Every structure is written in structure tokens, then in C-alpha cells.
Image (cartoon, rainbow, N blue to C red; front, side, top):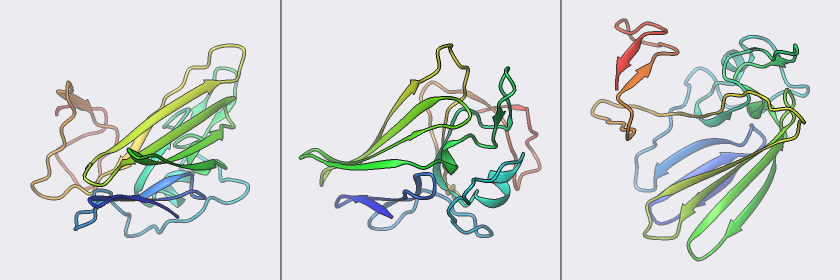
Length: 192
């Protein structure tokens, strides 16, 4: 595991599990990321699993990962298979730790399999006294023609009663999946 921290925050990630961030918490208490109580963290098999629900059935243990070049399984226009939750959760990543007076950073880079692209994420935790985590992303296509894609930062937050999640400029959201609620339906647009 890799730990980035200061006197206020701590971020823990597992490089071999698709560069998944398993913990994002205040050092004095609150954990912000949810963990699946029925599915422990595990490293992707080699070769990585395929199938329409490979991620959800075997690797959706919580935390924060990234989805690219798709979220839902499918195929490209030329017939290439796009796996459930994309390539990144099962990719082999290269990692660098970077430090400066302002922040400590963990940069992870991989080349995707279903489309030729290089994906890089840099996570930084500010120096002591700075309660912030920042993310920088870089995507470099390696195919001669443009490739359509979806990307999603995929944090699973441990929402508790009284929690308020605000996203500036967003007033509505479309429901993609529902667990534990009877009042929302998949595809429904709801106020945010």
C-alpha cells in the first residue's frame, strides 16, 4: 500500500489493485470512502477476468477507482470488447512518489488494453496545515483515429445521516444504479 498524509488527512492506496484508493480520511476520525462488507479487496487475476459483471461480482470492494474507456460493458464500433467498469481496475500500473514543500504526490500510469491509450492520475496531499487532496489526470490517445470513450472518477462515499454532498453547478442527476432505496428507479432524473 501507499500512504499519503499530513497532520489532517490520510489517503491509502493499493497499487496492485488497479491503483485503488482504499481510504480517504481525517486522521482524527472520519473515513470518507465506503467499503463493501461482503466483498474484500483482492488483486485482479492474471489474466484479468472478462464478462458482463466481472467487476461488480468480484472486485467492487469499495474505495475509489477510475473507469475508462467505459463504465458499462459493451463493444466498440469495430467490435473490440469493452469490459465492465473499463480497463483500469485490472491494469498493470507504473508508479512514482513525488515530494515538494507544498505536497506529496503519487503518480500512476498505465496503458489500456481495449483502446490504445495511456492514462495517468496524480494524487496530491498538501503539506501540514493544508486540508486538501487534489487529482490531476492526463490521457494520451495512441491510435491514429479518434476513439470515443467515457471516463469516470469512481469514488464510493460512505454517506451517513446528515452527510451533504454538493457539486457546484449540478442541480439534477440521472440514476444509474439503486441499492437499498424504493423511491428511485434506474434511468430516472432526480433533483440534486
